[in-house]
Amino acid sequence: MSRDADVAVVVRECGERTADECVRALGEMFGRQIQRVSGTPFRKTLIKSLQAGLDAGRTWTLCVDADVLPTPGLMALVDEANDLPSSVFEVQGLVFDKLIPIYRPAGNHLYRTALVSKALGLIRPVPVLRPESEMINAMARQGHEFHQSLRMVGLHDFEQHPVDVFSKALLHRVKHDYLMEDVLPIWRSQAACDDYRVAASAASLHVEPGGAELASREFMRSEANTVVQRLGLEGPGQLEAISLSELGVMLRKAQVVALGADAGAVGRLQRSVDIAMCGEEPLSDGWRRRAQSWLAHWRARK
Image (cartoon, rainbow, N blue to C red):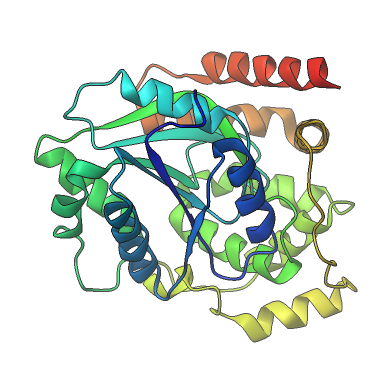
C-alpha cells in the first residue's frame, strides 16, 4: 500500500500504557498525523472516532484501539478493503491477544467513510456492553455488510499496566464467557507470567454479568490496585519504541507460554473463535499461515 492511501487514522485511547507507541508506529506506517480521541463511556469515544473520520473526508477511516501494537498488516488491510464491494461498511483484521492467547478480531476497524453518517444514526444513546458491534450489526441488517480479513494487524493487550490487565480480565469474563472454561486454566497455571497472575486474581472475584459499566477502565479500580499490590507488582515505566523484530519476539514468547500451559485449551479456544466468527468452517489454518508469513517477514528484516 502507498503511504498516500486515502485513509484517516484514528487512535482511541483511555490511558493505555501503549497509546504513544501505537500512535508512533501508525504514523511511521502511514506517513501522516494520527488523530487521537478519548471519552467515557466508550460509546462517546466511538462517536468521536467516526466523526474524526468524517471530518478528514478520506475514503476510509481506520480506528485502532490504543491497546494494540500495530504491524504493517494494517496497510495491507486497506488494499484488501479497496477490492471489496462498495456495500461493505467495515473491515477488520486479526490480532494475537495476550490474555486470550489466540488470533482473534479485536482492536481495529476500517470503516467506509461514505457510510459513517448513516452508522452514527444507529448508535443508541443508552449504556450497552458492545456499542460498536451493535452498530456494525445494525448496518449489516440494512445491507452494509462487514468483512473479516485473515490478515494479522497487531498484538493486543501486550505491555499494559497490571491494573489495566485486571480490568480487561474482568471484562473478558462477561464478554467472552463462552471461552472462560479454557482461558481460566491457562491464567491459573502460569504463575511466572505476571499478566496471567493478575488476570487469575481478577477472575476469582464475583462480578455481576452483563453490566455495561464493566467496559469502564475505572470499574473495580480499588480492587485492582489492591490485587496488584498484594502480588508485589510495580507499575512499569514508560514504554520505549518497539521494533518489528521485538514484536515478533513478544509474539513467540506469548505463544510458548500459552501452549506450555495447555496446548489443548489453546486449540479449543482458537476453534471456538473461528466458529463464532465464521460458522462451521474454521479459519485456524488460514490464521496460522498468516502468522507464519508475518514472522518470516520479521526474520528477513533482522
